[in-house]
Image 1 (spheres, rainbow, N blue to C red):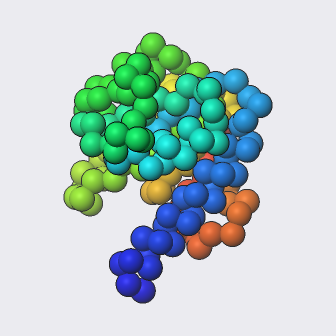
Image 2 (cartoon, rainbow, N blue to C red; image 1 turned 135 degrees about the vertical axis):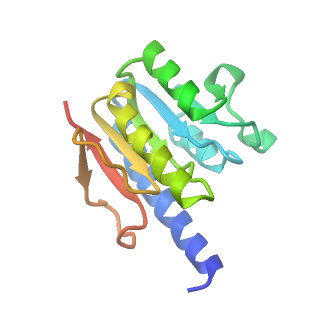
Length: 163
């Protein structure tokens, strides 16, 4: 499979799980966290699906397209290892939906980041929260769910936060 086809497949899977998840939480209270703003495409999609909902976007730097930027008070910049624990302290267990798509180009750095992100999730998420990730997460408080939409196996990972 070409890299272009792989990218398209990943984007289709991402859209499908985001559409499902936003429908699941639409009537539930809680914050939405976009961990890895990037150019802002996913934030923009979440904003369209969940109008008037607080959607906090995290990234190391602001590289989002101007049309896809969150309001300044919903944009959290800096190293995730500092910004996410501080946010968890200020907003413990307030997230109803968390989307993680912040992979690094280095396999070992990815593994390390996924480890401490996985450990931090229970401090951010409320019981029953939906957690979506482009990479596998590991935490006993996360219950793996099969995608309720037709996407290729291991293409996107869905979890529910246990109480």
